[in-house]
Length: 477
Ligand code: ATP
Ligand code: MN
Image 1 (tube, protein in one colour):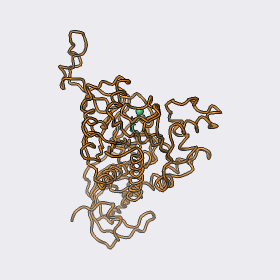
Image 2 (tube, protein in one colour):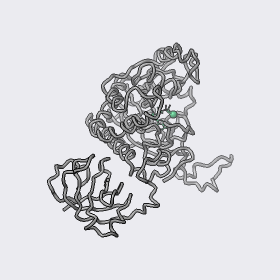
Image 3 (cartoon, rainbow, N blue to C red):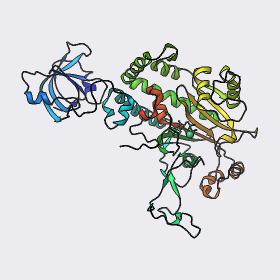
Image 4 (cartoon, helix red, strand yellow):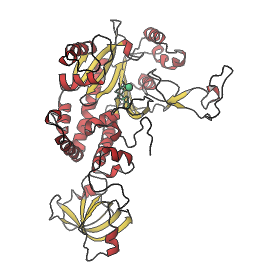
């Protein structure tokens, strides 16, 4: 007989068949009822122990957190809350867990506390649900692109370029930090470093992704990216995963269509394949909402919000239209924004993005054609000489979830822009070569994976949707 996973067991019709289960004890009641979980589903299997026929020493070791193996017959359950249960004929202890010392007690713990014991938090209902959904979303992303014939391209983690030109990178070196080689001028001599030049962890795979698109047509990357931004927010991590498709012969509209289709697809995938987990999180959120005053509660619950998002087209507006809406808003006039909107050209803060999405349109919004001055060098310049073919997708409760653009494919315009922004063209000759040899219209975007998981799980802090979060002053586990 082989072990059967609890997810499968719970779908069987009980006919007294013999099964073996292995898992971890969540609770043990009345010396008789074990709630057993093996991670395959949020639901526990009720294992009923015959305490008269079981040695006292074994019963004592059935404690919260212990790993056990139970063999028995599957029968219809008399009790409430489950349809099947296992009538155990034998229980073996695989790994003991000292109930006094085990940090997870059978009660509700705060998310903050669980973050401190992130090595054990997968064993809770909430994090079990979150990380099964995270898995499904990752799989759905690959399936979506694979089915469309995109090539999954692995762009480098260590790079000598900083795609954004923003500089918020982590350096990579194998210098002895107590004895860093200097040149005649007293500057750090990177020639002596491992790669013979200054290198860092990637902030984006886009530039390399474009090289792939110029050969395969459609590619995507899905990998970790690193930003040393010292922003301690609920939406920023120092290490996060990003999905970056890049497509030849796409303009900005094609780009937006693809991003919208991708988001609809992956959210739908989770709704279909993670029904129980989403329902669990939905109930959890509803309980939390009950603690809040009526006017602070969300209009839609998690399930409704996800359904709404997959059945409605996203609103598409230009930056200029967005600024007009914000400028004219009663929020702005009553000075309710921390940063008031007075003129065209300012960068939107997350309070403005959220106003547009949550208050004004009440649905996801795509903003296009941003001022060139606040966007990256590679974005295609519009005829007006002021704006670029950029697009950001804003989601309720999240703010920016996608950032993308049509890329500047004209060599002269691109070089002029790089010179104006003091971006050294010598170091990016390999990138400029795509514009020299068979250049073409192309576009792409970056979807922050954790922001997607935040949205689908309804969690509010990005630290709770990545297994081991890296944030300023925090790199545990
Ligand atoms: P933000 O304004 O929110 O900092 P950004 O403009 O820096 O975002 P991009 O450089 O366009 O973002 O990156 C593409 C996507 O990656 C974003 O839309 C977002 O979903 C995600 N992202 C960016 N920075 C982070 C971060 N520090 N942690 C998690 N996700 C991030
Ligand atoms: Mn940023």
